Length: 291
Image 1 (cartoon, rainbow, N blue to C red):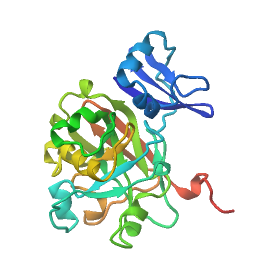
Image 2 (spheres, rainbow, N blue to C red; image 1 turned 90 degrees about the horizontal axis):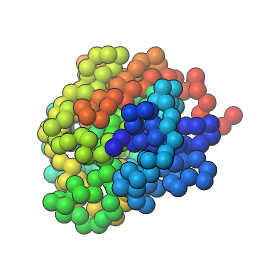
Image 3 (tube, rainbow, N blue to C red; image 1 turned 45 degrees about the vertical axis):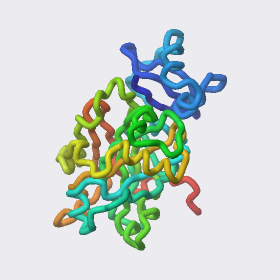
Image 4 (cartoon, rainbow, N blue to C red; image 1 turned 180 degrees about the vertical axis):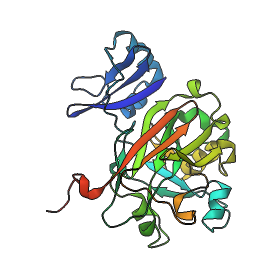
């Protein structure tokens, strides 16, 4: 099953990709579920399958995508989880996962612009695999961890590098408005097959910048779920962003950062292509910005 979240006027609707387009499952006033997270908490894939029979169909063409889960309870990102990336950043090999938090408000959907903030010109791409939790748990054993996975999505964990390096904490550089992209689909494991057999590719203006198989992950998905569930109860709709391969822009000579007018793509076999244009903050309306 392939879930998608999109905008209909002032509402965030969601549905399932079907042969005829998108089967609308919820998000609109009066719907059974408010969004994908609500569905995962209340019935999951089985309930969605039952609801598909009577769900109205919409065309895929012209959808205005939103982050596939716009309201996750938690977004935990993993740093330094590919050996080539550890080396290019000049760090030691980790003995435990390096975890930091991204906020939902920093995310955009497929096709929406990533925004270069006015205070920096160092917005870097980071193509990653996002794992979405479908079943709650605490102290989850690694052997049982995959039973807690609802599905997978593409993620671009955009990093404002100068702010990221202001201290040892990554949070400022990872949470600028509209710097992380999530989507276009959440794909269930029965459709992806063994995710470890897949490869991730990041392209900037059509040029391959990153490419790696998921077998190269230092800490694999079961290890990440087991580790994170020791300090927090994982709940349906929570997101684990698993780390980026080598080839990031800041480590290149000379550095390559995303700039207005660029297009960046993150592609994962069996999941799809997450594509976003890049714009300057001066060219968009920034929520909450002081006059």
